[in-house]
Image 1 (cartoon, rainbow, N blue to C red):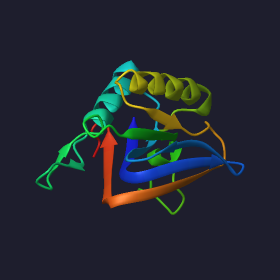
Image 2 (cartoon, rainbow, N blue to C red):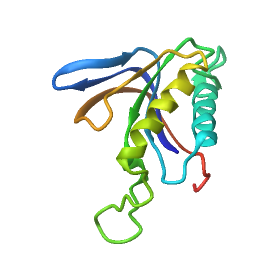
Image 3 (cartoon, rainbow, N blue to C red):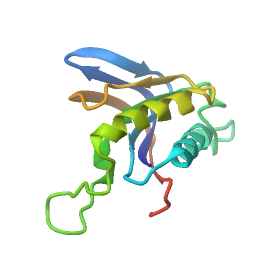
Length: 149
């Protein structure tokens, strides 16, 4: 699994002009499943997200997690995080999990993430979404459970 994660003061996702998921302070994670991802990847990504230390402590150091600051996570399914630009000008998505499988994998990922004790909001799988992010910092982190970068 891969994720582009942003520390936010707020974030929301809209479908057809209606807000379907929103958080205040927390993390907005654009998450994609890879062709060979399994249950271990789901758990590893959920663990990374809830324990990612990007929130400031009293001394201004980034040492607190979303759990510690009572924040939320807006998780948005996004296969484009697997876009490969090593050749040409059009991204290849060959390493992304096919949508027929990814829908169930992402739903399972949300279950695992919610079991970690963090409020989780989400978009709608395969919908045309508008995501509004108020990036705090700005702080943007890339996570790959296969550690390819």
